[in-house]
Image (cartoon, rainbow, N blue to C red; front, side):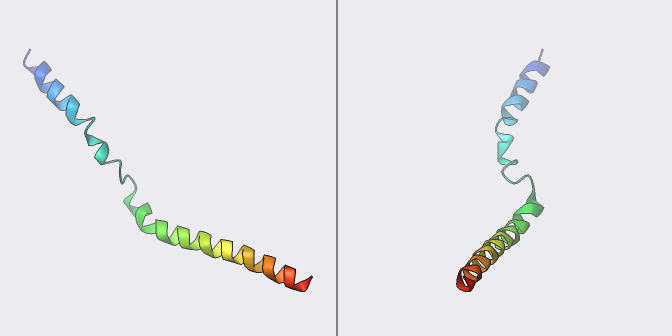
Length: 57
């Protein structure tokens, strides 16, 4: 019988643990600025090609 209260005390700690999934991929957090930078560069490339094509026409 005492094992049930112990389990119930463990159970509330599990719902409060979603603070861990806040950063489930720590290696991605470091990569995120790089990915964003690459995306921005890609966008710049697209606009650059658009601009040059407009200039050519």
